[in-house]
Length: 279
Image (cartoon, rainbow, N blue to C red; front, side):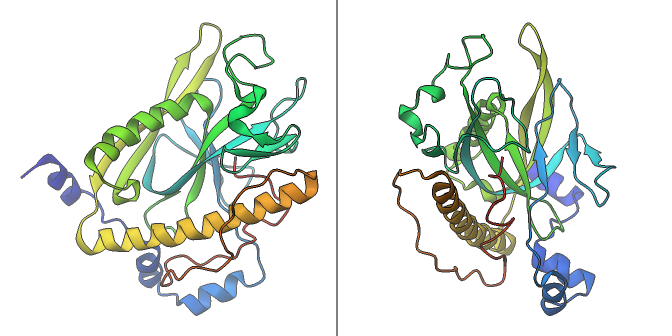
């Protein structure tokens, strides 16, 4: 028996949202009634600062978050996101960036335009005097579905964690011609030092692959989720464009809610029209 099959036998089966809801005894109608009229959002998790090796997870009590050394689940979708704050302004959740992009391709605000042509998106443009980084903050936003949960958590990878993630996806999935959503992964943290400060970098490990009916179920969930998120991001981009008066043009998907067979149900206003980008 190979190592992966042995590991799967020792692990608790991964529960998809529909299965978890059924085990709890609540119907879809009951759950829908609980959230009627509410704007749903994701739990947001960030790469910590200062070389910490634990994730801070929002809990029921905002003043008492949970902490975890590892995050385990399925990456059902991910996308790039860029944000720019002018010199003298530090990154702050409560301070909207002057320019932002939901896909890392087109920015809206000041200066706006194609991210690939923007001087703020070039190495050496940072305002901290290092001469190495970018003035524009590049991120990769990951949506991680954990076992037994109805919605993914949203993990924003910092610039220093994007390369490890890219290398992981290439080795664990692209090289095997397998979609990222087809496996359960583990995300951890390690401390590094740039010669001056400690910082944290994400680590990635593939735990096991889905097969058979469970693989079909997670693929259906991921496909439906992707359609929904792309619709939400297109709406959010239009809102940013309207607020900033940007004139950049980009193609947007038609706003037709996808058929997802009940795997994922959420409205287009996930966190409200004026909520920040998923950073």
